[in-house]
Length: 288
Image (cartoon, rainbow, N blue to C red; front, side, top):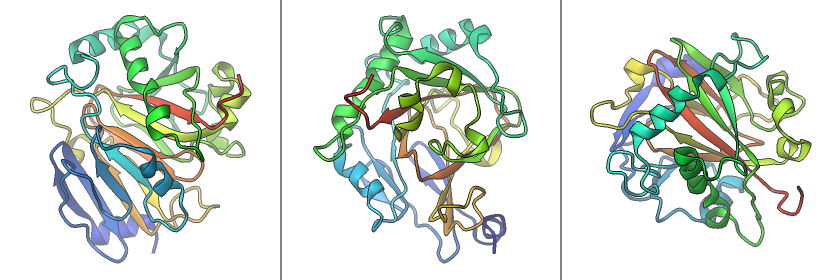
């Protein structure tokens, strides 16, 4: 049975406080979980910003664990302006719209990836208004998530991705697999070789409109981050996945996973303003 058939036959949805997450398993249904306290479906762990620590990353990297990714709701709380260095969502949206002409499509082609991207230089833009505030928020992650055995560094360049066209998508891929055709995008233009080959931990922060006025609904809006859990190493499409989880791009939500191993995709979106900021934390802290 392939994952598509599994989705059709055993799909289940459970509600979190910050949006819908669809969970599909070949063997069992997910139970309702609340992200307000640390909890897990077995493959996805919900935690809070204050509880996030290096043990979460150790669990992701441990082959004995089935944990594939960690979800932190309200890593930035755009609704109140608190918890994220006082970042106001209206300022975020205004910045994205103002710089819209700087976003570029990638050479991969729309059949593979149909969003547009903007590379942000964390050194030159650290004092650039709301962009600088977002950089500061992401810059806290290496020290929070690192450990004596896992030393992490923020890359010089992080990526803003805007899925603004109806049905914008990014097909199944891994973030650090140089031999894959899916890695042939504009990364080589913007990033140093170490920044490409040393991607270690993917950190995706969603800059979508905040609830309750604009709650993201996977069943209506699409645009979910689909993670293929338990895939064979050589599987680039998800046919061998033991389970599939769709994570909604809720406002201020941070998703963490291993860049080298987790197969994932962005499902076609039917709603505008799906914006994500991605930092690939590196495991070469002593290199330039």
